[in-house]
Image: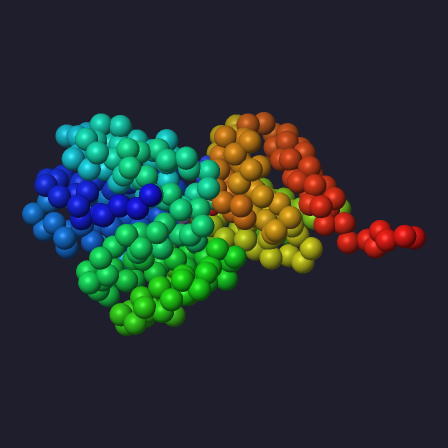
Length: 330
Ligand code: AMP
Ligand code: MN
Ligand code: MN
């Protein structure tokens, strides 16, 4: 389904915007991009963004300082947008979506069945920012808005590298950089650059990684004690799973960090042989075919064993369907 953003917000005095817990670049870019857009279209309305505190690397996006991360009690919103998420992944912001007169979900997760009254869910599109771009009146684009949308696009497509990048994605990216923001610096500072501590943790997790399933799979984890030692937060662990996935021969990479005793937050990345959205969905999580996440209970080994069963099943299925041996008349 498509919708007209301006029509849907006509007459609204108070508009809220929320995104998923542990917001990533797509989530932050989409929330601030929509915030800028609606403020431009409805200068008399009160528009607010509610997000868990995002990483400081996103501070240059216009509106970053206006993000509300303490989730105070508010009168019900006339319209509440749920971006890059389902209502149940909004964390403390869930209450706003539940109370709002009208709710609108804009997302691209294949695991999202539509969690609001109005839903624009496009799993074929690489980022929520790209979905949002398609819904916007492009006359309203300016340099700040272009930058916000661009951040989301680069983060979810791995700077236009992953298979969720389409010709249309690149055309939109081309139009956006035409607004003249410093995109090389933005890519470097929000996507590639790591703090020294982040680099140390990354090095350590790579060194301690273990391959299994005949070298098709790799896993590494970090426990709470080690995170405390480095004063690391979950947002400092971004990018580790992609680095594991970059290793030759790896079809599925798993990175886990301990959230509390016997509980791990799991990130999964894969190539074409494994659909990690299905693996994550089995354990109550979700995501995309090549990038997904979930939370698991148990020891490190329990978690790996549980995931391994599902990954192995998919690997075997793929191998059976792509049997490359020559079966003809021998
Ligand atoms: P992550 O490994 O946390 O970077 O997540 C990879 C992708 O899966 C991102 O697009 C996330 O938004 C998505 N994802 C992670 N966890 C969940 C979940 N529990 N439900 C739905 N999508 C998720
Ligand atoms: Mn996201
Ligand atoms: Mn996204």
